[in-house]
Length: 307
Length: 255
Image (cartoon, rainbow over all chains, first blue to last red; front, top):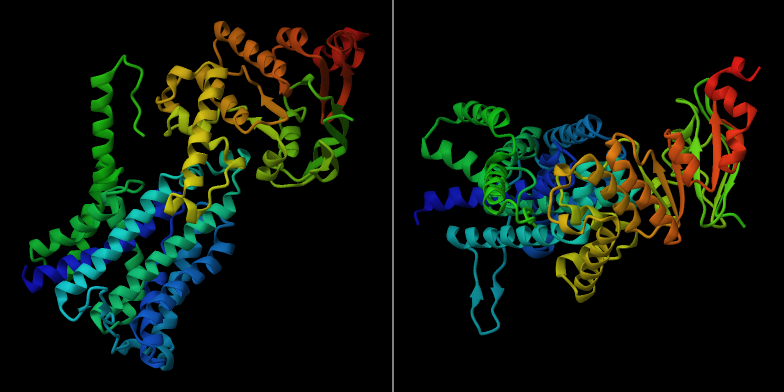
């Protein structure tokens, strides 16, 4: 695998983590956040600041950065999740805008427009049978990030298919009905939001470690929109959706060698076409297709559901 | 002691008193109907009992606990189950999943247990599924558990919405027009279901407009008009009450 291809796949893996984390909140809990760039930024800057200024090494900084993102998710979630629908969306967007401005304007702390440099790569992990797992090469970094993507997808999969996940899904369908059935909707939404923010922090910290340099652009609220576009194209509320969508939205412009400023335009057009013609996204469309197909196949047999 | 005791309950929306000074009680095991003209405050009363609205004044005591002004999920936790006038089910989920979600009050699986899939979490899932199947059997939807709820007929959705609430094992079941929007031929089946629920030991309180049904099945009737109860008693008592006739047929008929 060439360096170029590896770096593209690596970025796809990082943005997939973002899309998977937003999917838990939006796809499965029904709470649309436009502010996930904030948690991405917090994760990245927290890793950078802790590792560079405190000189604590990668691992403590990584776990701290992840925890800090999750904690911010929890703090913002308490007031924001009291609101519903567009009001919630606006608060998340406002939060993202504030974080974006702070990162840019607090020059002494974050380095301002110059960004922050010198992020550490993960320290080698000693293996039980001798030798060490090193992360100096691009390929090893790719597998390192892929590992986190797989773990996060597995966690989301288990969560969504558990009884806890069913309460999330119930809230996404009808919050009032969920509450009248005895679900503490505020608590469940807060759990979902905090987990989602934590995973976004993981993506941010991984990005910072991979890229060595981070700039305020990472915390710009447009990044949150990009992630949402990937999620919608792939299919919110499906397991494969966020990854498929991120792959499509990042691989197509790359394969066509489109100049950067046209990328945004092309992505916008793709998103628009999906919203009009396939609002369930690629994975959602597949699911509906196979559901209908299976239904026709087994019609009359009583069983036509999907687990 | 009565299962539900409501005293001097009021709810104002701005200057409008939707419910004012309402006092009544529901005895354990009874089937109570709440009737009254449109806008009499029947659904508002249900919303007050289930915590959707906070009362402006008054007190609600359920099973010995003061539940005045508690949150909807709390009232479900206390054992008050409620269905809505507009049939509400999770349309995109299977019938079985709907009834599983109905048991949320009792679910103990935490996030960590769900991710690790502990033995406790798996056992609870099995238990919840089993319970859901037995409730579906009870309401007569056993052969539809894998259907999407949104694809069911209106009557089956009514049954499902009742099953979702029954799954939590309520002490008091509030049904807001359980036969509303259902074909005439199918009403009989739903009435049978409501009777079966009462016979299983659950206290039932329902809002209904179909007088023949109310008169034949209720132990006790509460008549609301302009947010206050103008009469209360057995079907026979209520039917001969002057105030009730006035509210339904107009003052001149009585005179």
